[in-house]
Image: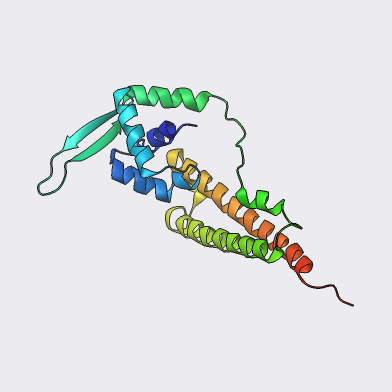
Amino acid sequence: MALSHAILVTLLDRPHSGYEISKRFDKTVGFFWRARKQQIYSELHKLAEDGLISAEIIEQIERPNRIVYSITADGRKALDHWVREPTPYPSVKEELLVKLFSLGDVETAVLVDQVGQRLAEHRERLAYFHALMKTHYPKPATLTGRKLGHYLGLRCGVLNEESGIAWCTEALGLLETRRRPAAR
């Protein structure tokens, strides 16, 4: 998937400024597809040049002009074409797992701390996802269309965080037994 597709999907709901898109990324798609603000603005420029989005300049008094982007018919066609392509299995780049491969050659306590930090991060994100589900999707059985798609993405996030919590808990249990001196 390219960043362009994530932006096109974001514009399906309604037109947005670049600022609004970057904020929406932080709270939605950004959990699954990371992008810096500079990347988003650069991609918006390319999408507009390619005719996949339109840009409307809104003049503002005492503030810089605001540019609001909308998906075009060609953008919808490009998105439809992309959705129909097979989705490759995602590649994993997990720095913590690579660090664990050094276990036995580095101080175990350092890795225990890092796994503990990861556990806290998983718990924090899970709490955030649960709050979103309670607020926006209290009755998932009634959802259709894009709302159902958003819910399914959020549900995947919940399950990933629960899995991360289970793994961290198991890893900490095993690491802690290695850190303690053997009983005599």
